[in-house]
Length: 258
Ligand code: NAP
Image 1: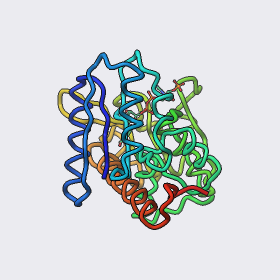
Image 2: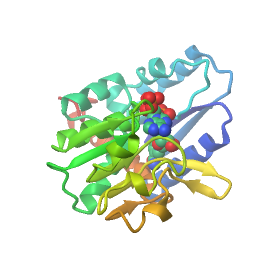
Image 3: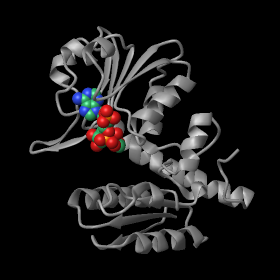
C-alpha cells in the first residue's frame, strides 16, 4: 500500500496527489492519504510519518512536495523509513544512488532512464548534458547517466554560455529554467532532447523546451505534455511494488539495500 502525506492547501499538490492515487487504483495498488493543515508543525508531520513507518500494511511512504516554508523538508524526508522511501529522496537512498548500490531511485530520474531503455537509446560513451542540478531531479539524473558511462555535464543557473554546453549534447536533459529556455540554438542537429520541466501555463502544462523551434533539428524529443511526467507516476508505482516485494520476500524492510 502507498501512503501519501500532504501539508496545506496547494491546489496543484492536491491534483498531483489525486493523480497518484488514481494511478494506484488503476493497477490495483491500495493507497491511503493523510492530509495535514497548512499550519501543521514539524512535530505533527513527523508523528504522521512515524506512524506510517510503523504500519506493517504500508510499503511506501511519500511526502508530497512542496511543503510549507516553516517546515524543514530534508529533516522530514529523512524520517521516512529508507526502505519505504518510494520517492527515493532520503539521505540514505541518495547515498545508495551515489554509490551505485541498489536502492529506491527518485521517480523523475527513474522515468528518464525508463524512456531511454524503452527506445533502446544507448548512452555509453555519449555526451549527456543535464540542465538543472537539484537534488530531486537534475543531480540524480546526472549521476545515473554517468553510471551508464555517459560523459556528463551538469548545468545550472551560473553556467556561462548555456547554449555552448547544450549544443555539444548527444543527449540533452532539461530539468530547469522556464518555458522556452531551450530553443534552436541550444540543440545539436540530431541530438536527443528530454524535457523534464513542467510549468502550468494558462494554456495548460508546458515544458521548458521550445518544441516548435527545435522539432526539425533534434533527432528525437520527449515533449511536455506526455514524455516524462506519466512515466514518473509509473516509476512511483514501480518503487511501491519493489518495496512491497522486498518486505514480503525478505521479511526485512530492505529491498533494495546492500
Ligand atoms: P529546482 O529545485 O527549482 O531546481 C532548479 C534547478 O535549475 C537549479 O539547479 C537551478 O540552478 C537551475 N536553473 C534555474 N534556472 C536556470 C537557467 N536559466 N539555466 C540553467 N539552470 C537553471 O527545481 P526541480 O525540483 O529540480 O524541478 C525542475 C523542473 O522539473 C520543474 O519544472 C519541475 O516541475 C519539474 N519536474 C518534473 C517532473 C516530471 O515528472 N516531469 C518531476 C519532478 C520535477 P541553481 O542550482 O544554480 O539554482
